[in-house]
Length: 304
Ligand SMILES: Cc1cc2nc3c(=O)[nH]c(=O)nc-3n(C[C@H](O)[C@H](O)[C@H](O)COP(=O)(O)OP(=O)(O)OC[C@H]3O[C@@H](n4cnc5c(N)ncnc54)[C@H](O)[C@@H]3O)c2cc1C
Image 1 (tube, rainbow, N blue to C red):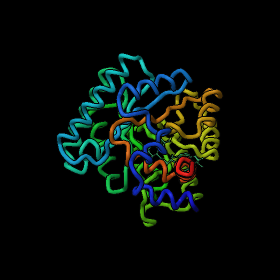
Image 2: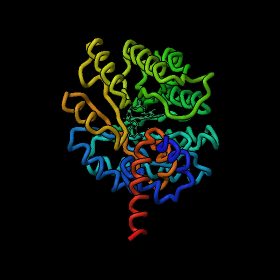
Image 3: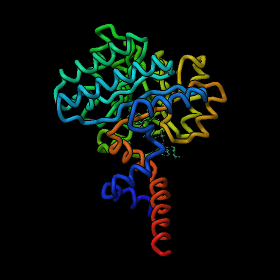
Image 4: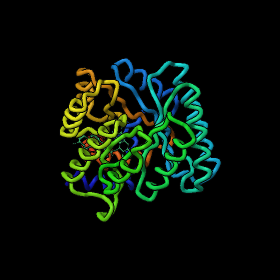
């Protein structure tokens, strides 16, 4: 209860405190920070996907800054021989400014990735962007670009239909539960219903022969994922698990130890605030723990 209350008032906290609480989820503010974290992950047998933080850009110039930042990331990945691809948010590339601007920016990023044999995952954002995101993904594939994948969210009632609509492309899909607040008309809210739809969607994707990034920290879904890939007779190279930086590291290590491919989502950049709030809202316990620890220390200091 207290944890949830703390999370609700987090936006009123000083940014420095939110930063301290959310440190574990973010590699840092620079490409060098991201590279350092990815190297550590690679040394532990984990792959990475690097995200330049910066959703909802407000001008064409800001979108170009994001494109440039991805170019720097590709150069760093090559230079430092990292086992990493990238994840992009279409609102950061200008989706809410103009579809064509976003398309042009996305093309630049995907083509640059292709030059070094790299891959771009298009994150899925809130439901106002779902149709355009899938449309852009299809357009890129229709142009012959293969080094691009997209995300489907198991809480969305439409996801199974989307899988059927995309099936002929044999898409590379990250399947996750979904993090944005959506109305019940379009999204499942019940925890078990989301889990059920996750399994139904995963089954359908594997049946269709898609490469799937099974993105979850939910122990039940991880074991269902293992069961389903075994049932489909897949080798470890034909799928991967995915997790977020700073979340359930013991479970992540277990997956690697058992021989599964695991990719960690590594966000970095100056625009860490919105991402941090979402992560903390997912896990109020962390906010509660760090906030009370900080207050205790402040209180202790004042009382001396
Ligand atoms: C690699 C990756 C990429 C993603 N990309 C997208 C995307 O493009 N679009 C989108 O809408 N969502 C995305 N998500 C977020 C996802 O939709 C879920 O919100 C998130 O993964 C939590 O769901 P879960 O399956 O882990 O299950 P949950 O039931 O939420 O979590 C299971 C357990 O994991 C732990 N846990 C989960 N989250 C946290 C946290 N933040 N801090 C600490 N512990 C935690 C807790 O122990 C929890 O009990 C992504 C997730 C991952 C792993």
